[in-house]
Each structure stands twice: as structure tokens, then as C-alpha cells.
Amino acid sequence: MEVDSIPQQAQETIEKIDRADLVVGILADLDSEGVTMLCEDLQTLAGSTRIVVLQNAKDSSVTPTPSEAAAKSAFPFLVPWPLLRLDPAGPPILSAFAAYRAVFAASEKLGARACCIVASKLENTAPRWICQLAQPMLQNNLDLVLPRYARRKLEGLLNSSVISPITSCLYGKRIHNPLGPDLGASPHLFRKILGTERNARANGMHPLASLTPAALCDNMQVCEVHVGARSYPPTDWTNISSLIAQVLGPIFLDMERNAICWQRTRGCVPVPVIGEPVAVPQDTASLDISRMVESFQLGNRDLQEIWSLVLPPATLFELRKLSRLSLEQFRMPDELWSRIVYDFALAHRLRTINRDHLLKSMTPLYLAWVASFAQELSTSGEAAASEQRLERLSIAYETSKPYLVSRWRWPDRFNP
Image (cartoon, rainbow, N blue to C red; front, side, top):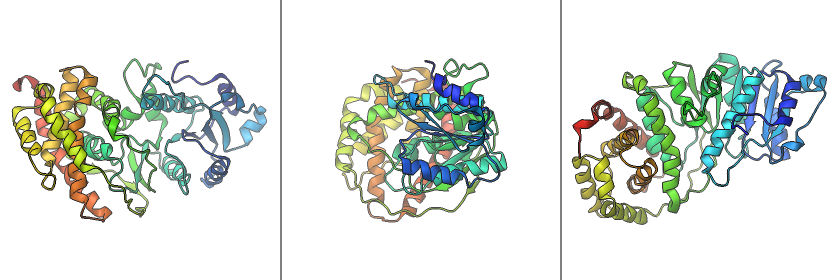
């Protein structure tokens, strides 16, 4: 089955529904109470909006087969559909890409004016997120609506340290969660991702990783919506290298694809934000900073051969100095970290070594950044301190962008 094909029984149901204004893809498991709450919330959307909900289900045989008259009058209409067709042999994030394509394909078939996807675990008020994401699209014809989650200090650190600041810096728009995973997309955007000839895999675009860069490079209308805290899965710090490779690989591929766009982009401005920030209690979770620093120190000893192919001598010198600091003094400067990320992006483009090995070799450096970040915030219980700290990191990425552009255009100037 092609990743963006529609299961036969679901396709028959969709054909009877004929068309929809809004398609909602629920990738998380949802119990009957959650389904009821979701439908009640969706009914509050203005006017006679025709809504189809694609509900994640393990067995597509339970898909209802209503009469055409019933299908066209009963909205929101639920279509059970195995959206997350996980491949046991493959990384889960790639299966999620397939699910996004599937929702986009159904939205295109139904001629929807907007498409919303919610992948986070739905708890408490989370079903309201769908209406919050959908409303601006239906009312204001926006192309991409992204969540601005209420953030706890030690959650979503790969996004905070790399994905958000590099996306914002490259494309000139301050985006807090460029990968969603909860989001709303317009037909203009999801058709661009699918490809005019249904060749999304051939052109290398991943629905989740390519969505924000595609919208920004095409000057589409983008906004953020304040929502509550996202429920993050526990981080497996013992296997973090696999996550880094899975997530950053598509990000770096998009950098290569969109190089003409981001090299001529100057400055960085916030996108419009809808709603008010949501206050959440800060978690009491802690990180094993000592072990992370030890992992970095071990990497600094054992990975010099690989790092010397990627990083300039000045950076290697700074890392050696960092490895000799005591735990209390351990801090990774923002400029050093942003240049490391840029150097790895360039090495990924040049295929300096096997790409998977390259990205996994970044793990001790990432752990060093996490340890430094956690160490700085350990004395502050304020969420605002985390936001201010990440703001300074974003500025460092922007300040270092000329370094990236120079190395990208003339990579031979640095020859280790």
C-alpha cells in the first residue's frame, strides 16, 4: 500500500461523504469520552461547517458504511482509519510521516478548505486544541497554524536547542514548534507537500519536516496559537542518538533543498500569535547532569577522528577546554553550540561520512548542551527564565548565520 493511499473501506465512506470543509486527523488513541468531547467542541465552529474526523483505529473494518444521504447530513462524521500504520522494522517517526500524508490525501480528495492533525495525547482540555487550530484557518484563510505549547523547562529540548532556532533563523520567522506535531494546513500547503504528481517520496519531502519550510519559502500565511502543555513521551537518554538521527536528518535535507530561499533571508521576526499564554505547573523532573557530562567527555576522547572531519580546529579546541571544566562550571556557549549545529548540517550535505553515523556522533555534543542548559536553570524555578534563556540561544543562531552561509557557499575554505 502506498503511504498516501486511502484504505478501500475508508475510501468508500469518503466517497459517500463527497466533500468536507474541514478534515481532522486524530493520530492519538481516543476513548469514547474523548470522541464525545471532540464532537461537541467541533460543533461550536461557526456556520454549517462540514467536518470529517479521521479517527485512529487499529482495524479499518469497523469503518461505517452509511447511506449517501446520511453521510452528507451527519457532521462531524467519524471515519475510523488505521492512520498510524507502524512498520515494526522502521523508526516510528517515519511511520508518522506516512500518517500525515494519509490525512493530507483524504483532505485533498474531500476538497477540504482546511486540514487539522492532532498527534499529541489528548487529555483534559486538549480536544479544544483542534478548534483553536481550525478556527483561524476557516475564518482567516491562513495556510499554516502551529501550536505554541505551554512549555515546561526540561521538555522538548531537541526542539528548543536545534529545530526551533535553526528553522526560525534560516527562514526569518520566529517559530516555536515548527514540527508541530499538532497543526493546521491549507489546501495550498498540503497539496504542495503531496506534490502535483503524487510524488512526495520521489522529491524527498517529509510531510512533517517540510511543512513549515515549504510555507515560509512560499510566503504563505503562518500563525501560532497558544495551547496548553503537550504530553511528551519519556525521553530514553540511553538511546537518544537514534532520535537525533531520525529527527535531524529530514531537517538537514530540507536545508539543502531550500538553500536558495534561506540564504537570501535576512533578519527574524515573530509570526502572529492567537490567544493568551497558558500557565502550567513546572515539573519536578531532573536530569542526570553528571552522566551527560561524562558522556560528552568520553565522546571528546573517542570521537576526535570523526569530529575533526566536521568541526574546525577552533571549535575542537573549545570543546577540549569545555571537557576539562568541573561540573559546577560546565557551560556551553550559545555561539559554540549554534556553530556546531551548522557544521553538522554542512557535513550532512557534503556526505563527509555516512549520514547516520554523522548524526549519531553528534549525541555527546547534544548531551553537553542539555547538561549546560539544565545546570543554568537549576537555580531558577521560573518558567520565564527558560524562555529568556532560549531567546538568547535563538539570537546566537541568528548572529552565527553569516558563518553558515559562508561555509555553505565555500566549504573548501575549511579543509581539515
